[in-house]
Image 1 (cartoon, helix red, strand yellow):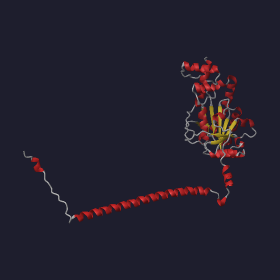
Image 2 (cartoon, rainbow, N blue to C red):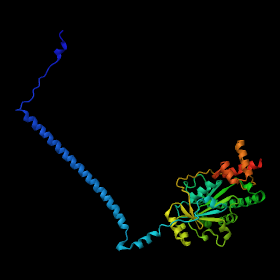
Image 3 (cartoon, rainbow, N blue to C red):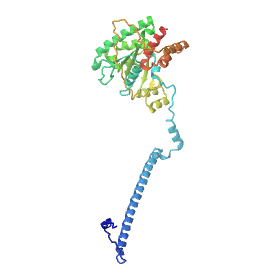
Image 4 (cartoon, rainbow, N blue to C red):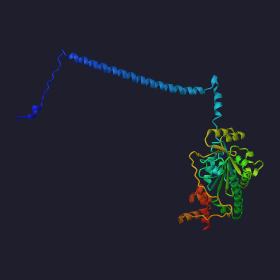
Length: 373
């Protein structure tokens, strides 16, 4: 049977070049090889140049590093013994008795923070207020709206009269708390902690008539009445605080020196290692005559709600603690710890879980649990 598909195929005839025409194809092939060789040569030159540039740049960097070392060498052929003696004096910066817990170190004492503008005095004061907890009151006649956010600020826009009125109320409250504590003990003041921050106290002392009396009265009493004073200043002289000859008042305060004031105080103590230690690290200060390593407060965010001040014309009473519901197992655990003689502080922090600003709440709760046994 005839296959009709074969009719659709058109065959093209191809003939090989004759020897007479083969020289044309040979010339094309030689030209292609020459161009390929030329491109390979260019690529090789470019790659070699890049390698040379890379090696040259690395050699240049290494030479600069060697030059920096060379520039540190002594001039005019100083002998090696002198080089060793010169560098050895900067290696020893270890000091002893470093205060690492500022809150514990100032327990029962008021605090004076001394430092230049920008050294973190306000931030440290806010951190202490937040850690200790309770009502916070700030005396700052130069405070801007962005400063002391969330706190009760007295005296904005230079209102020294308002500062005088509040300081007078503080002294009246101080006497009332002393009377209550003498009659009913420390339990009567549970939960009434107050932190009083005086920004740039030398200015307040010169501008507010009762500021010196306010400062002296709190200094003599310490922190037993639950009123904690933090005075900020750019001057660490005793005269600037008006306590010349007031040894008893000075003992009621710890002084925290920051920045150059800390270094200057170390020089007065004639302690070269302490002076070098202050310069070598961050967040280092002097608490009286002791080195103090402050916490890193760069990410600390202060937030304390404004609390109402206890009215001065009403009797001071201890609020009844509102007890959260506690399981019987926890109550039994507290009872067992008390009978075992564990300290109240350990029970409050480790068993009840109250720490930092909530410590006073835990104290009130523990006292209530003890009274209901």
